Length: 413
Image 1 (cartoon, helix red, strand yellow):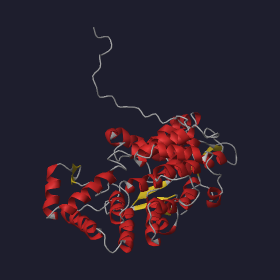
Image 2: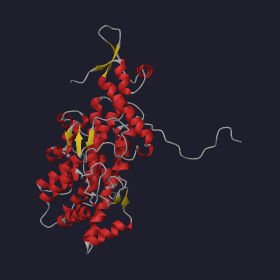
Image 3: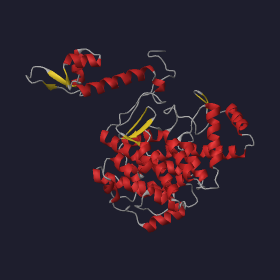
Image 4: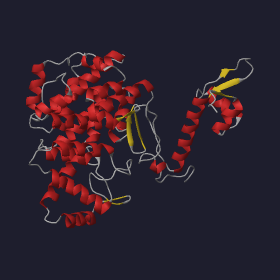
């Protein structure tokens, strides 16, 4: 039996669980549309629109019951058509992100998420910033970390962008390309380039193996987006205030840097370093877990166990498999994989993408902080997609707080 396209008023009200007067109130408030039937005597309601409103109402009720969990792996707080995480899979606009990571470039995924052609991005004009100016800035901040350099240079570059506030589709895409290129140039550091980002990284880090360059490409794609994580939600909040893309991305970078988000790769690098020096790995893990690292569901370690992937992070599986296939003959690959197995045997937790990024950094002998750089250069594509979506939405993100403090009763003396 086919699903009806339109519903009568009684059917729509029943689907929403409301009375007919409430249904009509929804229409008058603009929450729901209606159209006349063929005879013009009754109103009909788009079934898909009614079901969407019903889902939002259900989410709102669940949020009211578990308000303290809404922003902690709870019910959705925004509607988006960019990324879906469900049943152990990660999808970018309906396409399996893991399959994309096997072959696609970051630029191809950017075209998918930004809803334009790859040729449009390739033909984007060069960054409108004098090369000599950029080189001088890089020299001035050469002693800074990639993150600090980016946080300084992105706002500086924005001040030189003639169309940074433009909202037209073409202007937005040109600005998006400039942000992506300048972030790579700031973090590597290098001159701004139209070359694919993974090749820029391979050149900067002197990665000459084609397989290893392909691993860098896959890592960028695997990190491109992950729904409403802390940094992406930050980007959407900033964008909703009406600021430009450079400002929103700078805010995303600041949020990403925290040790409980993208900065976790630094903690994992320290874990790998400690574990490599431990004479007894099992004893080391037992002591480490007993000391202080506990989560909601028991002992945890940085880089292991993702709440959205109970059966293991598919991004980590792909990247660790690719790493094993291209690791240098003399590398710490075995000790990295040995740690992952030991944690799995001890806690049941599987590696996350953060662990895989730290493992890539260690096994390939990349610069310190390379795992974080890969994360940031991949994730900026998702941030931009979310910023564009939020701009189209046009509303200010302004949640309410549930007050739990003291207050003076009205009329008290």
